[in-house]
Length: 149
Image 1 (cartoon, rainbow, N blue to C red):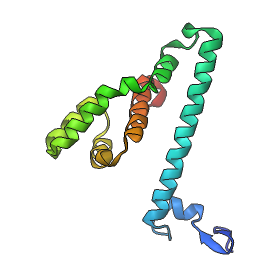
Image 2 (cartoon, one colour; image 1 turned 90 degrees about the vertical axis):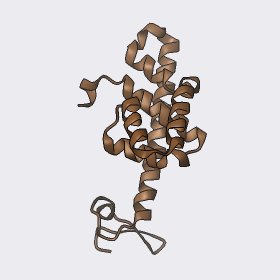
Image 3 (tube, one colour; image 1 turned 30 degrees about the horizontal axis):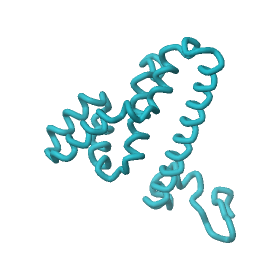
Image 4 (cartoon, rainbow, N blue to C red; image 1 turned 60 degrees about the vertical axis):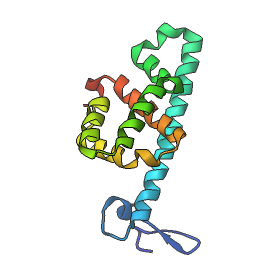
C-alpha cells in the first residue's frame, strides 16, 4: 500500500486523491457515489438542524428563532413546495430549453450552470426528491446573502 490507497478485504477503493484530482483513477461512478453519499449526509444534517430548531422554538417560543431560523424550519413544510414544484414541472415539460432555462433562472435566482443542471435532472427526480430540492432552495433563499458571500 502506497499510503494513498484505502483497502478493505483486499479490494482497492478510491483514495482521497482519486476523488479530489480527476484523472488519477477515479471513475465517473466513483464521483457519482461520492456525490450521493454527500447528498445523504447533507440531507441528514439539515433534518437534524431542523429538529434542533423546532425543539428550541418549542422551549423558548416562536419569537426566539428569529426570521432566518423560522424560514429554515418552514422550508421543510411540503405544503410550501406545491406551487414551486408545479411551476418547475410545467416549465420542464414544455421542453423548449432556452425559454425554460431563462424562466428557471428568474424563478430560482440560481447561476446559469445551476439552472442548466436543474433543467437536466428535474424530470428524473421522484416527488420526495423534488420536495428535498425545494426545501434546500427555500433555505438558500432564507439565508442572508452577507452570510454566504
